[in-house]
Image (tube, rainbow, N blue to C red; front, side):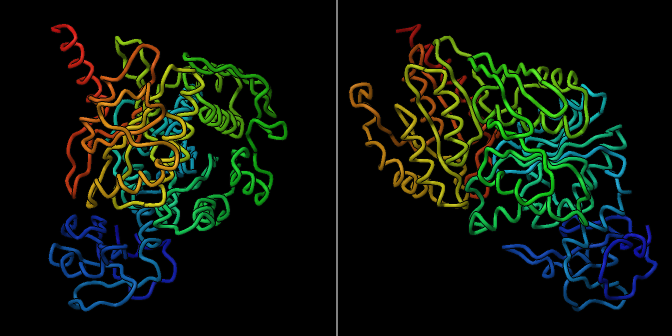
Length: 504
């Protein structure tokens, strides 16, 4: 494709768009090949302008920059106000506007996005679509997919992936839209048919600084129709920020437990087997039978019903889609055992998400709740004491351990957590009888050892919640990814306990 064609939809271009042939797009100089157009992106830690020379040395024939750089005369230099926005527009053109041929449903919010994509994928399949999914766990179509590196990929990667999915027959897309994606123009080029707002709780404040900025970032999806199109908005109005957004938008479809919501619950029953509910909607009554448990999952189910109604899908399609939805990996995912205990692995890694997960399992009235959790390194430090408080409040025994420490010292992260949990309960020795000691917590830095310790404490009727990593099958220690899957670790610990009890 000619450079002038690639840049057709990019505004405010300075420079002569030579009729040079572009065969490849890249924003990482290491991915450049002969004939590439290289985009110099400014990041938090690095500036792509510093790698322009490397890109040219590797074969780039043109570069997109925000300020002129010194280059050989043979290299075409295109200057734009915003390289990320330019890349999104150029990538959409280069890959043939793939979502123009798809039904597109976006989901944004702090918690619930991944569960929502599984629910919506199932509903769309029931409606006869062949949906692709872009999200935290994977980018997939049907049984084919790859592990996701980001909740929402960079625009160039996103458009390439979508073009591939479309060529494989995808005629619908369900996509998690992160606040970073909206701030960094990653979903520019997508025109949505429906978008869902699940909730907003403290997260990514190291990036957004405060909740109002975070809210402003999330709601750009609903307030910039010149970028994302005019579409029905489905908003969880039980959430305070959702209620605020309802007031700010023109005729959104509100969902919630309260009587004033457009999509609302009239009857609900939740058991260990799942959720049964009757939902009133403007299109009629929807009856839900779902294996998902907890109030927060009821909110997710309501949002999914709302999206189905907004898409004008038949009631029976929505019902059957929700009933047949697969369990979501790492979201209250159960690990089978012979102890008579309930063991679940969950992705909850904020105070609010952990509270909702523990509320959901507490409603099942277990004998005791044991919670293993940690916090990620190089991320928002304010949530560490908050998660400590939540775990201490809901759990009979909390086990504070390592998560993904990244470049921070695990012991320092744990100390930050303990500031919060110390407000609720006392630290115990590892050999303490915590039934007699009452509510308390222990610290076991090694996550494997923490899981072994917890499994050895379990009795029939107990509940073990292992929070923070969910579907992840790795730990990030320093800059290295090391294989580590909470589900595998639990199974090993259960096997070790069984062998020990058999031989003793």
